[in-house]
Image: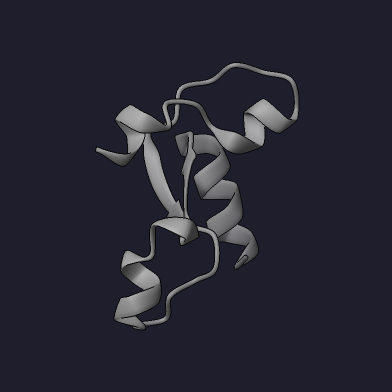
Length: 59
């Protein structure tokens, strides 16, 4: 449902590209905090490439 409402990758959009979001990312890692996990203000749509880059960097 989140990706239907937020269909574009926010990182790509910030770079001037139009790329579909395929993954819901937690802006701030939840580290098991259920409230942070489900907080819609902590979600962003990312494409697979951007999500993988963010995960590798540990952000």
